[in-house]
Amino acid sequence: MRAAPIPLFSEGDIAARVSALAGAIAAASPKPDIAAPILVGGFVFAADLLRALSHYGLDLQVDILWLRSYGSKRESGGDVSLILGPSENARGKNVLVIDGVLDHGRTLMKARQLFLAAGAASVTSVVAVDKSRKDAVLRADYAAFAGVSGFIVGYGMDDAGAGRGLPYIGVMP
Image 1 (cartoon, rainbow, N blue to C red):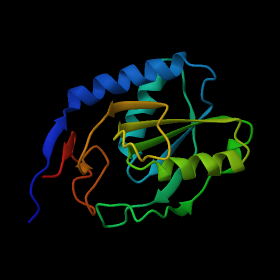
Image 2: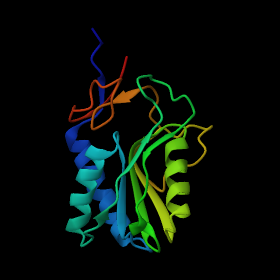
Image 3: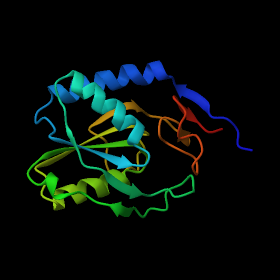
């Protein structure tokens, strides 16, 4: 039996940060035309962020991207597998890539490369949690929370399938 995660950010904490992020993204230039959630870890955050963005007048098209880097382990193997890539809808558009956590940055880097290769005009990234690792290959343009250490679960992020449905973000002991 797995130990329960230690809560880091409550539902209320998350809701407040998502609203603030939506306001910042809506005020930025260029404004995104398309939201691109990265499955599977970014889908809960993406749903909340897309609803929050609509309150600021941004009702974005969605282009799903499915990348995998963790599998069933707590540490990324370094390779990012492409399961479903960008569609032709990205050509000439400003893309907002949405993910749950930025650990080493390889998944966001791959997403950025894929959208630019598909002809996107620009790619901006937003994550629920940026671990702010010194060895990360990039930083997110926007992050709800930063500087978290340890393996996190909840709010769409999981530990080999467990914890994804938790309404908060917690760290595994």
